[in-house]
Length: 344
Image 1 (cartoon, rainbow, N blue to C red):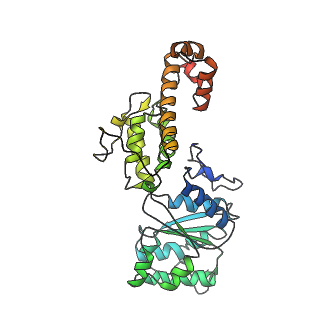
Image 2: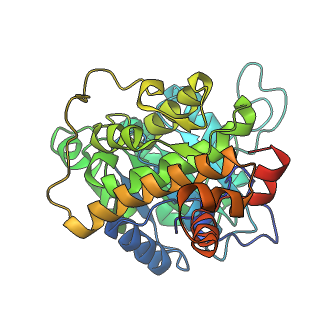
Image 3: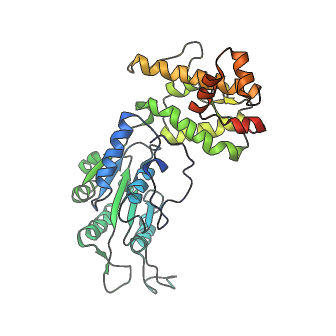
């Protein structure tokens, strides 16, 4: 679950069944529960409604559901309902036939047709107009739709996944969202937890983004200092995972050392350097292990780099057994061959 491999590949290609860890990074109790719920719903065809703040990874979860379903070899079609005007969105979804209106000089199948046999992901569905909501409801009920200007319906087989950062219950009360559509799309609700409520995932995510971007930026940084990790853990991240990714990418542009330091992180004045804030709700043993692991990795890498990957020489300087130092390097995924070649 915490694999930090670069997830930039296109996992929707036919014949490629991805692992859950290709998309979602984390090992918090909530992440484990999320995986369990995805495992339950992915093999089915029922509608999934993902809700949560911006930047929490709603599209990644939707794509994971598709990739783990029987529809994975068909299309995964994404529609951002907030980014398209009502008139254009209708044409995007349903398509049109030639001559349906001015400038309609060719047939356009529409995204429902494109998603036939696969998954249609309607992002920010709460922004959809009442008129379009009614048409969407009919498609979901009848599994058919009519293109603009057509004289017959088109059958379609789609799996619908929706996402929103709005409170649709309040929108229903205010008359902005159809109650019948809500119950049609909300068969399997999947709420996303904001990053600030699962700080134990921050370190894994930060390391994942560091490994993802460091080669693109041309840096050799292999981790974060203990002080930098403290800053990351105690920052609120109002932009959630998307903001964390941005901050790590930015820090890699600024870093000049082997580790990203607190001075490389642009987190404003939300953290006081004079005192480290600890999450007192977490067990002492977990906090102690995190700090020890961070120190041990930073120390081991700097020590071995100073000796060009020579374990025996580094162990003599540190006053520890060579086998123990080798085991520490292995535990922290320190590539000794690259150190000897001067590449890390």
